[in-house]
Length: 123
Image (spheres, rainbow, N blue to C red):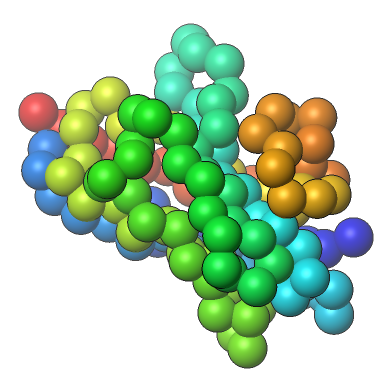
């Protein structure tokens, strides 16, 4: 089990950029696929992106493909989500989570969750 803490959220204007960080503790971090989810007001939590343990493979939701980039620095036990060309519909609480194996996009496939960080995009 890994402990996760997100940071980097904030208020930005549409078209702007923001980088989220997810700091992890635990010696197993480098072997764990890590994902980002988000939950907008009055909506269900949705999958955003996933990265393999090595960082060599990634998956993106269609809604963010081409705008968001997931990455990781295993030496720093950190996963990032670089968000560009932000839209008001990107407004949500963003969560990072560890997956049991690469390929899961549903919440049930993830073991540990951070507390979330708020991203608000104004129009």
